[in-house]
Amino acid sequence: MKLASLKRGGRDGTLVVVSRDLKHAVEVRPIAATLQQALDGWSDIAPRLNAVSEGLNAGRAHGAFELDFDYLAAPLPRAYEFVDGSAYLPHVERVRRARNAEVPQSFYVDPLMYQATSAQFLGPRDPVQVVSEDYGIDLEAEVVVVTDDVPMAVTPEQAAAHIQLIGLVNDVSLRNLIPDELAKGFGFLQSKPRSALSPVLVTPDELDGYWEDSTLHRKLVTHIDGELFGQPDAGTDMQFNFAQLVAHAAKTRNLTAGSIVGSGTVANQDENVGASCLAEKRMLEVIRDGKPSTPFLKYGQRVRIEMFDDAGASLFGAIEQEIVAYGG
Image (cartoon, rainbow, N blue to C red; front, side, top):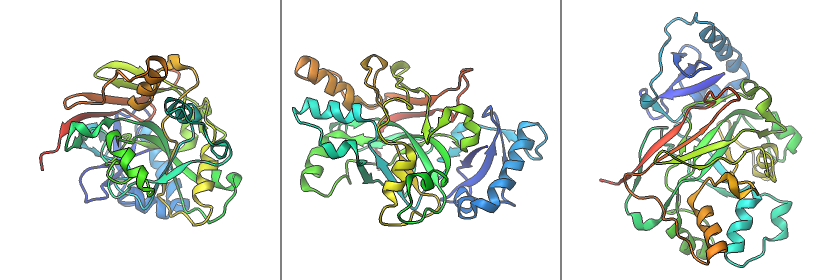
């Protein structure tokens, strides 16, 4: 099934079940008012939501309406936790090569992960508001999963069963703020503004054979101002699958239902497929030319992030955002 949240209904939105073709939706308030409420009681509530989904896809759901993405919040407008990995080593290796630095051996056996911001996610059509273009505005196209309650110290095999929903994220980065923050040794803060989630989150069973071994095997397609920027395959060159990432996050603490775990920027060894962030393209330019030539995003530019099935249908809907100046 596919789940989304309307912007009305408070800070956590109003949960709706969405049809497979993303054209219709139905509210499910008698079952769960919000997605967080559904996740809190997932084992009991998910079967009831799935029954609604089956009825909606069969054209017999009472109260169904045409879906307009402009009225959607993020499916999970705020989450208790968002941890983001860096599971695609081609991305890490290129960044290191551009700095003439080696990739630490630990990166190949132990996931790299940081504590991201989760108090508010942008909706799929909400603008990216930034105070200054000088901050170095960048998109980062990634895959995310959402868990139910995950016990501390689970194995990857156990963690796989706790992945309940899958989606996409634009994990916006302000690149020119990152060096000084990382130099302090406490990680990202100001350099990571709000991220945007895809219009819907999807249960693994809805993804047919695309979801295998806790990995999503589809191309992640990114456009900037209508021009193709990159389409790496999310199932290729992923050093750590999502079960491993969830287990890593839960090594010393339990994860609360509704926790979001990100893949990190999707990247392939094949440079011909393009990139999922401007920083990576700029690093390739540094490696090839000695300096970057591609600028970061400017006000007025638009980014679009999407994933398709074999028939060309959108799996999660598109994240489509304009970069705008923050107006206070």
